[in-house]
Image (cartoon, rainbow, N blue to C red; front, side, top):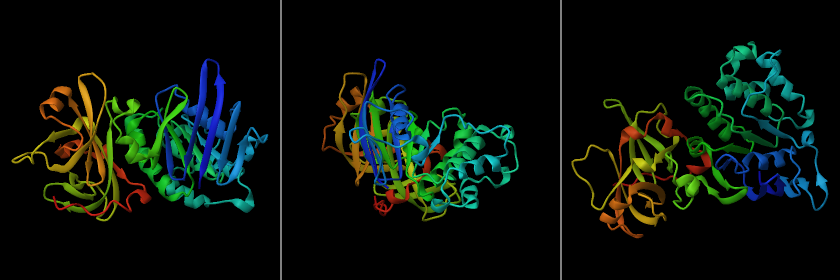
Length: 377
């Protein structure tokens, strides 16, 4: 499920000059507004023709300007989910979804109508008109319609941007299922770090029309040198793990991860389930010695591997904890007082109450195969 994308073109005063590779899963194009994310996926979809470009999906060349190949957008077999659902208001949910089926060749259809309905939890909505749906329900229908066209690739351009927090929480679990079960590679455009951290298997960071970094989600989110990530209020890292045990008396769940055991408010997943935990840099404290008589339940041993640059009042510190990467945001005064340098042994302290339901989702299946057991710390 490889995807190869490269494009160079001018759009008024803006220059797009970007390239990346993806091997399936959910690849997030992340960056600030105006960085060229939507322009790049419009090249992939065939909605924007660049001065120079090449797009290859699963070995099929869709665009190669040098070879004068430019497959028409309606023949590229690419599903596109926009910020707004763009459903047909005169059709029911069922009819909207079946409309997508018309674009899938009969000999090459994947996924049945019932399978897509079940995946997205749409059975109770099928007979309804679209005007009676919430924003989150409308987006799920739009995703279902795109899937029923049996796309080789699914493009999602800020699909949650128009939703409030409650509706986003409603849709995110379905996007996790889509990522893991639909078998379709996804390119997901967003400038919302929380969404990217929860969903992405791979991240491509864009700034001013260029790709400034790309790699596995945990690797990219743990880098303190990436300004678009490191300075945001939600900056931090992710740790993939496995549900180990539930404490019914105190309402806690213990997660096993490469970094060590994490105790979080109880989550509704059975032991053995794979999870992804987003730990914000501002919620991590550092100590040079193992703290004692502490209310915080999570203390992870680690080593400083990177210290952010800059001269502001805050600094980001990257810590390796058993092969998993955390990021702590400290004042420069605190970092100087602790005399932190790369190689220093530290203990990362994380309060359980900061790891609420919005910080925990299901991990990409391939990401947790190497999560490993918890350390005995």
